[in-house]
Image (cartoon, rainbow, N blue to C red; front, side):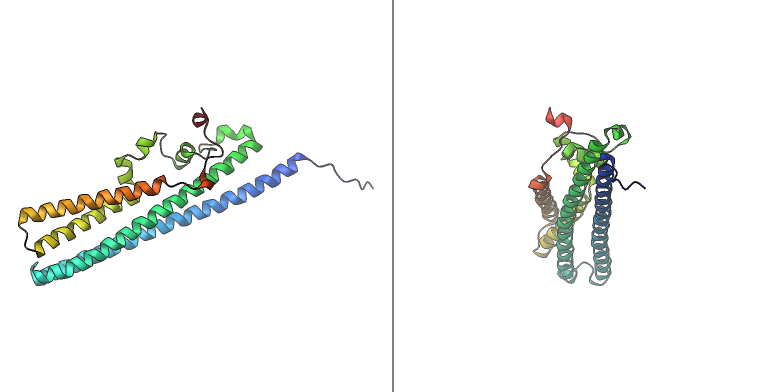
Length: 230
């Protein structure tokens, strides 16, 4: 009986690499799902608090007839809602950054798949490149320039942008109630509400843009898209 050891075959090494890459890919997919679940849970908690405060204020308004008692209760409660909303927006921006990291990681793994088996490229609809263009392709966002990505319309469609409008509206309500409390005329109350809304919206937008611009060295493109190289 022959006891010779079979020669090493490159295919066996490639199979091991594919198994390791696939395990990491499934791990990133599971982590991304957890990120989505936490984001939705955060939004649900905020909306539940907002709904509860609105119902409580409606009951108080029936008793106090929107008098001083109503204002004394409404301003603290709405301040709690605004604080919760700001905290939720901050956490959502962090979760979006984490989700971007997982997408970049999966794109790099996909790049490794294609290095092992280039003939599989026609079957992928997601990107094997780890720059912004590749990440947007994997997420499913249409290819666009940086300006379109940061457009107002796209920002308002995302969860942080939507919550920013809600929080800014709450701040506007606080501004209006404060103006009523100090005896400002109706026109001044409207102006105070509008100014509070605009200021809050501007600050939240600048905060969001500042968070988007932050980049970590580990997320620097290692396999940029061909267009980015050219």
